[in-house]
Length: 158
Image (cartoon, rainbow, N blue to C red; front, side):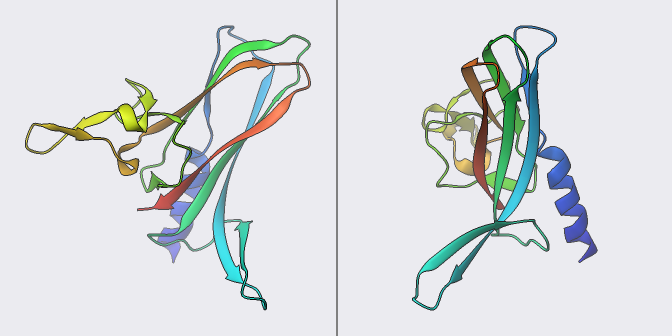
């Protein structure tokens, strides 16, 4: 039980995104969140999905990592890039947006998952999979003054 509490704390710390932009000082504020996905069935047999604070999590549990951003400055911020490293205990969920820009080599190269390869154990290369993703990156063309939004991705505990 204590291990799961430590894992949850680690996930919350690692969920904080890393922002990169052209200017050294940015008026962009970021707030990272991690939620567990809980599915229940109501009295009518309908599946309900709820995002809750993670408690005890086990392999196979689903999480949603989210980052809220806001431009509190007076000028637009162009080409704002935000990079999220995936915590080691999680893998990108198979239902993640296929247009996410990802890295499978620790952030050295970037592309769509469908375009990336990794080295196989026998020295050949194979198509990268969701479990190979190490980082996710978003680039926002312009974040105008007062503009805010949310970026997120689904993950599964390994």
